[in-house]
Length: 214
Length: 63
Image 1 (cartoon, rainbow over the protein chains, first blue to last red):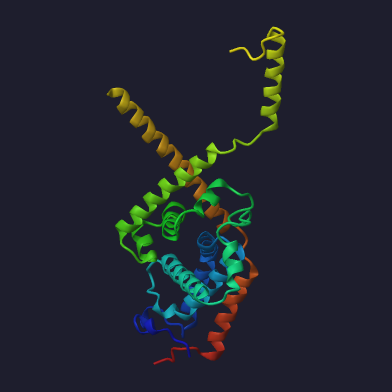
Image 2: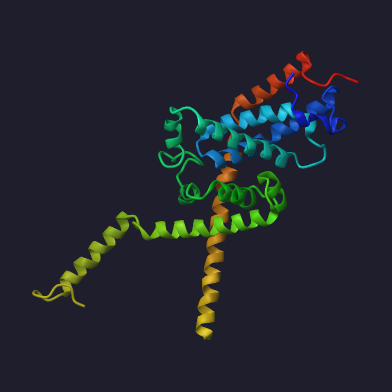
């Protein structure tokens, strides 16, 4: 009933009518789900939203399975569907629904603690400060192991564009992280101990009237 | 002059080292999610989709 428009081409490459092919496709999809989830998490941050997105993408992929050309990169194909879904969902939620405000506020700042992994890393936080385009390019190339060419296909842009986005993303991350590090250098108890010990020694060394020599 | 070149080289090296650390961290985060056990929802969903295709015959009728 809901056959996507682009189904027409490559019908022969993969015939869902004959059980075997569809089974293989299903097995291949199953094997890629962990990576689909990882990419989804990097796009939307929030784990629940990411899993919803990944499932939506899976349904879309299943519906469009006839348009997948056997022998080409299924992972890149799947990621493309996920990415398109992410942006079209977001456009829709921006256009409508004031109640989405709540969810929207949760995305960028808020409690990011378990967004990427259990522990909150500086890099995970810094990633949120990048533009969507920089972030996705950096994740695909820097973490997902995609070539610039495949990343360009997924992001629907030129290879050179991906390259410059990745470069800018790296630069921005370093700037953010270095900026962060200059802030509070975390008061460690050990450091406090050491400082107190040194002060005590100085007190002992310094003559009565003049504290703090130097 | 050579001092300046040296410090530039140092700086470039420091940036590369920094990028390696960041790259490692990115992969750690990504792999961390990819290594999580996949919630059952996903395989259930695929099973459902597969079953629907079997019974409903959504789409391609054999030529």
